[in-house]
Amino acid sequence: MRKKDDLQHQVSEALLACQDKQAENVAILELEKDSGAFTDYFVMCSGANPRQIQAIADAVDERLEALGLRVTHSEGYKQAEWVLLDYVDFVVHIFSEKARQFYDLERLWKSAKRLEPAELLAKPKARRTTAIKSTSSSAAPKKARKKKI
Image (cartoon, rainbow, N blue to C red; front, side, top):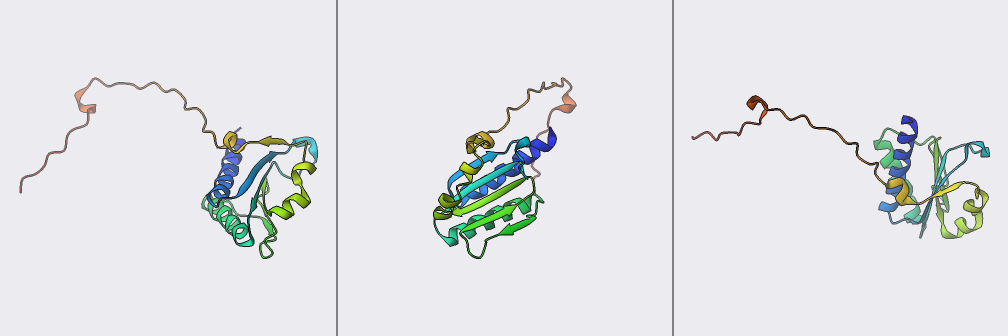
């Protein structure tokens, strides 16, 4: 179960990078294991122009590299119509609006479960822990005394 949690954290970091650059129409598809898919998730978004598309791609790359995750394959950065960033377990697709409508991956992968960004970004509930209170005075923090000079 740990791998799935790590994967969801990585996908949520990619999603946050997209949102930081004001990506539009952000969508996450969780692909079914028996669908013949080569990955577990698609993160898809649109940019308004080539510069924004490249900025989104750069932000995703930088944010995931900070986690120690490197892109294994990328395509389309120079043209900035459809940038693909492959991280093996998930793929980030950054489209121009025109390219997104033309290729319509959401329709092609309509059997995939569509996740809302809020679902993925929701923090897990904190576990209850019982605090053990110490009654000894040595465990209590001591106040720092100011030295007179």
